[in-house]
Image 1 (tube, rainbow, N blue to C red):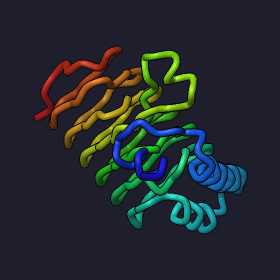
Image 2: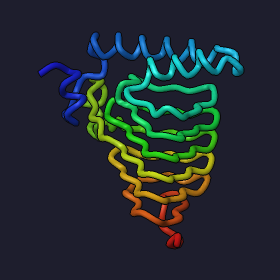
Image 3: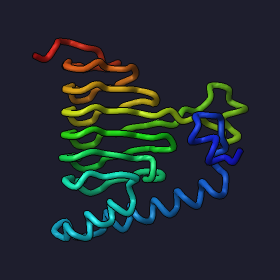
Image 4: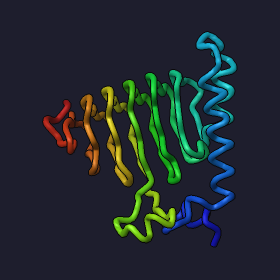
Length: 184
């Protein structure tokens, strides 16, 4: 099994593998190009995101700057919006439903580094997918950690660190992020 196959199957993999390194350089080059386009050049911006992202709905806007690791592991549905400074570390799949709105300075992290220093120092890691439902709104400065699923119709308050799954139809806030009320 290649390191990429291990990565995509949530197995321990070598992040320093040449194939993975080359894919990250390609992705970061596309992000650099995207981030340096004029904001009013919406056609080029849209085309570049479609080239970079695994699957994108027809209606979306990602404000610059935007950073990701691979791009091909990111999927989002219709009516997707992200404010400035979105970071998606995507060695595992990161899936967003329809009508997802993301405030500024938000981050979605799928990599997990081993607790054992010897293993970690070899550049070995895991990656676990993140799944976001439909009609989800993230306030600014939210961080979503590996393996988290967030249900439909959820609001995540600004500054939250989401470490566990969040069920549908709730407002959740804090560090760690906790449900504070149901949304009718």
